[in-house]
Image 1 (tube, rainbow, N blue to C red):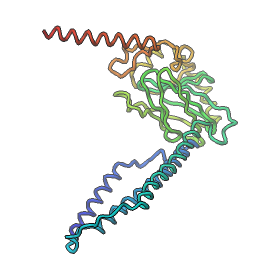
Image 2 (image 1 turned 30 degrees about the vertical axis):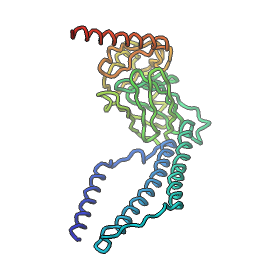
Image 3 (image 1 turned 180 degrees about the vertical axis):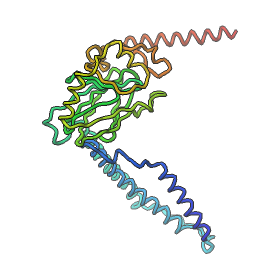
Length: 326
């Protein structure tokens, strides 16, 4: 008996070590620096409460049943009697999961809708609009009001809503700043929005969380939340000291590469907006061959003709293969 208990303790110790070894010492999601991030953390904590309750009840019942109905010498010949199902228990264990799902669904839906709006208390503050363009494997931030563009970093003022207008110059990405907000996808020829407010100054980590090729792991950026005075000072210096971005240089930026931080005193929005459905394909798909570029986006008629053409080519290749085999 002592030997079995020793084995059980050893197994539990090993399991605990394995679980703890996968934990990070700094869980950024649980250190929010803005109202949206706090709303997400509250929702996670609420979910953890019910998940923990379910876990405790299930494990407790499992241990109790295993112990109570274990095989023993005195009940070796025991055969349970035939009994009709207990309707009360069946109703109870059906209603409990329904109630738990409702308790999780209502706050989740409320939080998701709240994240689409400017946080309470900031409704009368004019938001700062920043266009975000993802490209393999970098982030491009355009400030149309200030006529500034940055690469792989973005500065924002504290206590002011920031509306990120997100799009992609190539493959789909996922824009995430865990200390400030949730995730939002960026897609070519489309525009999504993410509202962010930082109520503390500091440097916050952001990254792409959508796997899109060999360089996605290094697709990171920094969010620097500054006081209004420091932000205005940075804007002034960036406009005075930064070079102009040319169209040719911008095309080079869109190639699948890793870059450091860059700052320009104008934006690529002067000649292209990747969220525009009517915009022409701006980059050569050949640059992305082997990197997962989605290719040209067609209209419905063009897409139908393209699919028919591809099907014809496939049929010709199949027939050609058959003839060559003969």
